[in-house]
Length: 222
Image 1 (cartoon, one colour):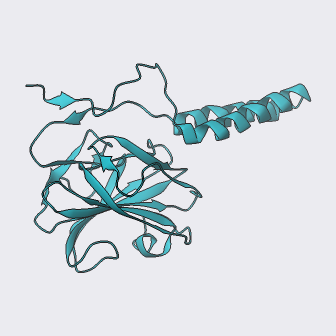
Image 2 (cartoon, helix red, strand yellow; image 1 turned 135 degrees about the horizontal axis):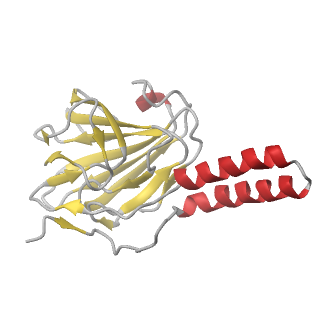
């Protein structure tokens, strides 16, 4: 039995970018070419460097998931900044186990489904843009939550939260969709955070400060 599997068919491209980034990349390339055309070569070179960074930011590598009964994958690349039980939250009833992942501008920002199930609700809130590493970001920042029900009737939520720089949350799924662990479902542009609200009997296998990778890292077991 294979230890890892592909949740989606791999693209086999040498460098793959996320579709939401095509507009930003195109704008950066146009600016660079225009500046070079009007002979602003120094600024054009700086714009070229920005273009390279934008391409790097919107990279979207294929990922494998580790097979295992009840495994929950990380929905984002980044660093775990919170992992503990909380008494209440806006998305699922009662106490739950909350995990927060902070994504800096150098992380891959494509988000993936942490555990297979059916999307029961999508809850979007406009908001402010505090630093995503702060606790108040979960409550006050722009955010988009997916409430997912597993096959055995358990409910959890995965919440995309915009950060200090981010101004656009992308979500590509709808209520009623059947989703599979490790599959792409959206992204947050330019620095952000992702919160997980899980059943209290969740067996956590990550620690605060640990770096995780979307799809590949096993966060724990439901």
